[in-house]
Length: 372
Image (cartoon, rainbow, N blue to C red; front, side, top):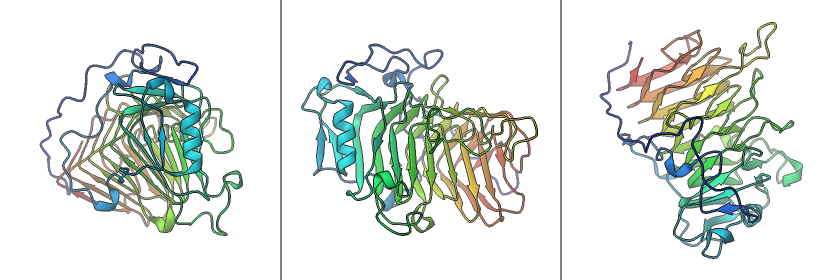
């Protein structure tokens, strides 16, 4: 492959085998909204670990986990039952650094409505300490931030380009979110973000879904718009899918989707995600549209998608970009792939590089990576 060198990668073990059909779960939610077992749809304790276990690309300071040694809010009082959905939602609404005290065992908090960031509150950092799973229970999105939503308080006259709030999620697992009932702000099965800044560190996303058809809706795990001054979304040491039965599914962007947003992705794993729409964008006659970007769907103009130490494999599409759909409409974007592996993604057509659909004259750099 032109400008491509083979990177010898031996995949380390990424957890025990997936249960067929999306994991087997024990125990349903209690009336508190939390259980010490897994959500009945997905068992996060059996899922793959966070991140590409052989990825070692240096992570810049600003992309690393935030310090939560002095939290503003602690959800829970030492037991799983005390870590309720209402307590979590209230903490997010108040803003600031949020940690959990749910006892020594893994806990799943199942929401019946999204937790929403208010734009006039402090920046939000949510740290699960590696023990907390947030579940949509198959019925709801989990997190929502939108600087242009008046219901969340307008704080500037330029809501589409403002520095705050900044949302960071770290050391968390997101499962069974479902945004298909969201009409106004569609896509973003687990997390929907517009404005400010957004960062994901040491986190996992399993079996999240969004709308199944549409030419430009997607992001079964995450959907992002309008980051401040075009600065990138950071994704660090995180897993989207990662094993059969754990992948995320939506019309486009089986894992993540954005319009006009740059991404810098470090030492992460995207696998077994699916873009299940049909007909592409714009939708072909007689089709509902969609089906592009098995793992990643980026649309817009001047933007950069940068992958470092990341694996993208075994994702699927019906239309374009089985691994990545990266289309800058004015051809001014840039794709950078370094110390990464993209392979064994299936379906679709219009390929500039294997698994990657993009305009042939869009700038790209492929360094010490395998694309096949």
